[in-house]
Length: 618
Image (cartoon, rainbow, N blue to C red; front, top):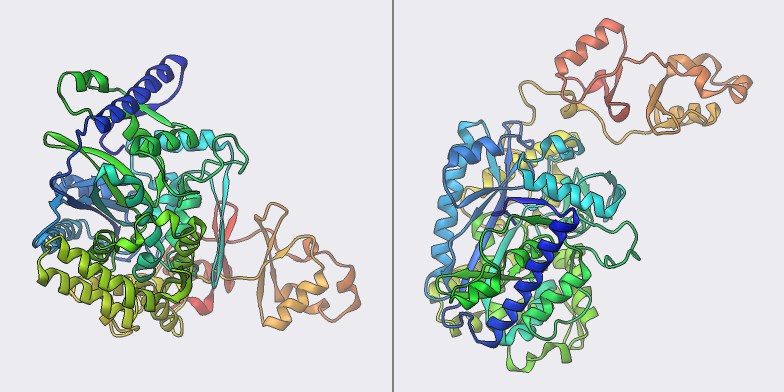
């Protein structure tokens, strides 16, 4: 979809034209499969590197469009948000030193991107979810100004017909409301591609599904969102909900999310697989098709693009996605692994790719026809166990419950060695990258490092400062070249703890206690006593800030009987002095001094997002 100028799928004429193309593409695909047109001689690998852009303050940038323009390299392309970009690596034959060659190109591209980013006072960060993303970075103001993103957003909203609530629960919990697809932009991945034999599609795809949980468990790198500890790979839950088109789980033809693991083992041909996707998920967008319809291209001896089918496929996001492509004289099919997160280093990413390709190609004969040996629900359960618990997960495998580290060390690593050797991959490449996985099994992966480091930082820093320092630490270590298993779980000696010109958002408290206008005044006063609060924000029935209760307002009657007969509205202050999160700490202190107050509610519109007190100011 990224290469097409898309448009809304609206109007009878446009829908008729689009669906004619879509059905023609399916017919052409079936004909190519029957006539053995697909490339089988040279299996290839490929990858897409998504990455984040941050400012000098280590927060999401808005410079992606300008940086992409200055990069001047066709390997790079835009992403949904103004703080993400993507680099597409060149496909390589799966043999010899292909992995080290890919690693060299990846490093070269990332170094170039970093050099250009620095010209815009930016840095690039390799991580599954950027720690410093806040709700204000997820408004459509941060959407990349490219028409296809706007059209896709409107199409998803149109199908859904209502805002969606995101709810993810781990150690902590988040409840977020969204009215766009912008939460998808939180997620950055390292998307791996492996060419497959169409004749063995179903068994190959099912094997990719079966191994997803164990592979993901060692690769997790996205344990937090907005300072909350959630899943070890929070991307899995967040992406699933961020582009969900279901207003109800019983909505016709939308019984499962567009992002998902699937509901059953694959069967039949690749064409059958695509047909099921078309049945399950309605098409959202169209385009101006440039070439003749696919059957005509075939009759003339060409290789069709299957543009309508690829367009539909680009708006459905299974974690293992079947893709059609063409390169040279023959078309090909490949599996796109979408669950691997970005980062934390390029070495870790290539090692993840090597493990996945090795296990995909090293399947023992005893595991042929996996659908007859393993219940699909166990494979799906394994995947979500891995997303939730990472290397602490336990998996259903071969009729047993096996811990992640044991299964990876004793079963998957030897399988990967055998598979890569069989493919004649260079021995030094195999040992180099699988050694990274082996070391990680014995140490920690990215999500474990991030959680422990953030907890350590929170001992001395407030949440915004800790998240910014964590992001700075990610940058510092990712470019030093050694994998995450060797990283120490602390970064107190790296980067300044406070910035020269702190903003309100850097210093404010976000975990605050509030009261409602209709609450008992006696109870609210006791809450202030119990917690030593000098100020308590008051919200109205729409959860908007409507007042502020100060201890000086209630001190005189706090111990008198009339407190039980006095309403909060009568006690609270309604003419409030507030401030925004982007304001400087200097401005906040000036306001406090000018109005002789010690507390400023931090607001966005009428919504309370934090509290800043005089004790928080440097």
